[in-house]
Length: 131
Image (cartoon, rainbow, N blue to C red):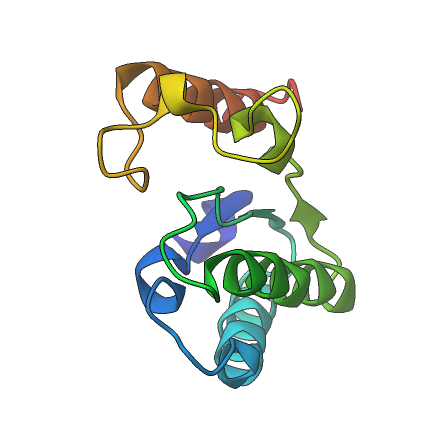
């Protein structure tokens, strides 16, 4: 039953932005539509938005795409009274200049078991009200 839904977690964008050569602004409207619909259909629910996690800098536009898409997500969170789950830094190296390679598979995009555990911990905290 729709009234029983009290939490919604969104984690979107990685595959969409990875090869996007001309920026991510075209995703602003679809993201706002998605979050807006969720807010409209489930007004009582707490909506959590997980950022796109860091990924290996594959192309000259990779970092800009990740950061700008996360800004889109942050704006949507603010616009629709959602919680932006700021876990991005936990997946970076100690100097914050690269991914934490111990959390990623060889491709620098997908999380390995350690990385999945860390992301799962964040999701667990949301689900069980430790966030």
